[in-house]
Image (cartoon, rainbow, N blue to C red; front, side):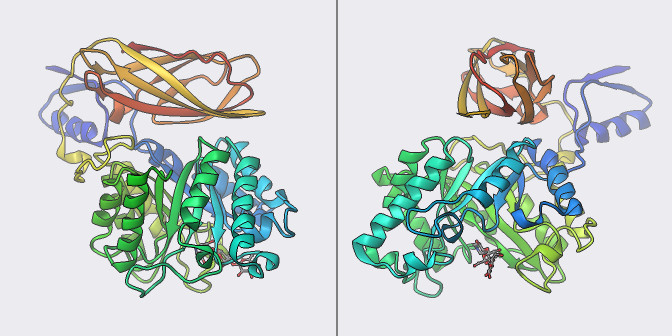
Length: 460
Ligand code: G2I
């Protein structure tokens, strides 16, 4: 007996074993899917796995080696904050932020911008302002910094930590809050005007379960969406001990249902159940279709702001911890959701071993591809949308032509053949099947120009 499988996954490998035990021969085409780095494993689910890094540590080869190898999203731990970028009023200095940005982009990684406005780490001159003077200084800051980084940032934390702890879901008192309750929406509008392609996030901590603080933020996001205030995502910092609360996934899902992406933005977990906690957070993100990625807040335990708590994935010597393995395994086990699904899609997590058959064939058929570009002088990020024709797809290929001098430095949710000239992008396992009229997205990043990519799509 000969069986052919078009879908390769852990499930297929399990069925290989079963089939062999039954004396059957299973011919598997394609590539096996267990990835060996966090970024690659996350990318197979259509997500990113990132870290916050410090410019001052880039000369440490152990540190930079881990950063370059493991992560495909980068956040500046401090270098893009107000006190770092505008030390004197209207005197902008992007030295540290640009070092982080270039380190990331030159190595094919994307960047989360952190953070445009926050009550902490304000420069002294801003701390001394109030009223309309502070409001205009704050909006000028948002405009200038977002403009400097225009087209290069995947998502900005536009406003950080504006809600209070233990105030029934109300705002935190701060000089910014005292300029008027509308300071947050003013910041989001200014950021959108400055960089229309960056996703704009609200970011906070102690919002990990359904509680008064997270509900206050939820109500703000719902209000913003209903009034057309530009907000695209909510960041859940997730500074945890042992693990997240039991309703972590439920909480992420209720925000996603408002029509925003959700991201885990500053994950670190102290305590004796650390490895388990990391797995739980990872699985929760994988189970929410609009959870687009996870960022850990530092690389090695010695790099953490939580001194002595060892809350990260690498020990102080740069060795992988049990928590690392637990995240990698959870990512490789995959999820049942892909970012880009309908807002609020109800999802469940199942492991791939529960599926031992090839997914139903939605039929072959034609398709179209369109590209949206985030381009800057010297590089670009391309997001390609694949839309199935009337009969659906069970496998697709998109061909792009890169201009001469352009090189692909990274990609996600696809496997590509080559980095220059004509590149053919193929589906990966989880986005192989696209129903009639439905779409899926993949992306790639490159150095050089992005003119005339003209993607064409074909069923495969
Ligand atoms: O506090 C943990 C994080 C909570 N959410 C927002 C994040 O932006 C925040 O990050 C931390 C950084 O990890 C620390 O590195 O923010 C702290 C400031 O609130 C950062 O600490 C500061 C020190 O307080 C300064 O003394 C130091 O000059 O880092 C600065 C640069 O090393």
